[in-house]
Length: 286
Ligand code: AMP
Ligand code: ZN
Ligand code: FE
Ligand code: FE
Image (cartoon, rainbow, N blue to C red; front, side, top):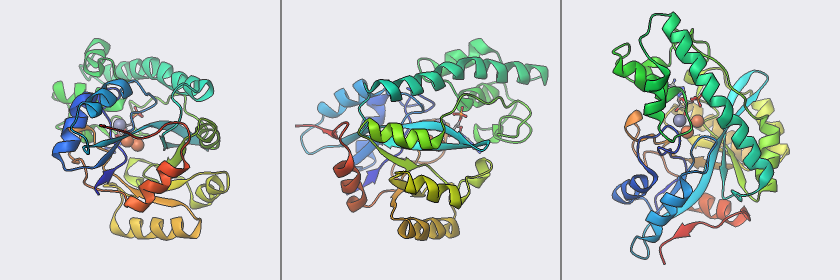
């Protein structure tokens, strides 16, 4: 079984439409894929329809989201799986983050313009389309403008990194609230790429231990932004704190170089996630 539990579609900042993501997951030889767009569930219907159209025994879809969180000024991401998308409190929190993404992106465009970068909000809005707008869309506009060579090249101190000159922060959830709300919505919470220090300051292990005590289900161990030493340390941490250890690609289509299934989750861990969840069930062709 090949299981990838962290992917983005055009419902947020990936480039594959949800149905194309499903097709690409099949082509990549995956058995299970989770759709985890940033702060939105708007890709579910299209992805689910695509999965239901496959031959029986095809791909299984795990519905999810990646929630934008912040603690002590440190931004972090919380993966949430198989929660009830209609549960009002968590729905409201996702909406608050999404709503703030628009003025925030406009603010970053304004800062870039002040720095002499010829990008416009209209251009960013076109690139984002119906997707929940984020820095990768702005980075794509910068690539189009010839300012940087790639999306990842825009994530520097000079531009869009957390300490970058054009960075603007957004409303984000307290991760303790996220863990509580995900659980209340019947979902399972997994701290995304906790050791991705290239993206900015990371959350101290002491705080992750507190999150574990507060009901966090797991941490993402195998991720392209974690080197071997980081993975070993996180795997030991997960064992020590009775956390599930997942592995996933964090696929963003053509917006990043990582491929579907580049990191995968152990089938036993996946089964435990599905077992714990009460908010939704994985979707497959029948
Ligand atoms: P936002 O949600 O708008 O703050 O943007 C976060 C997204 O930017 C994440 O999904 C990452 O994929 C991407 N990102 C963050 N840091 C980096 C980085 N150093 N290189 C490439 N992409 C990054
Ligand atoms: Zn993203
Ligand atoms: Fe993330
Ligand atoms: Fe992600």
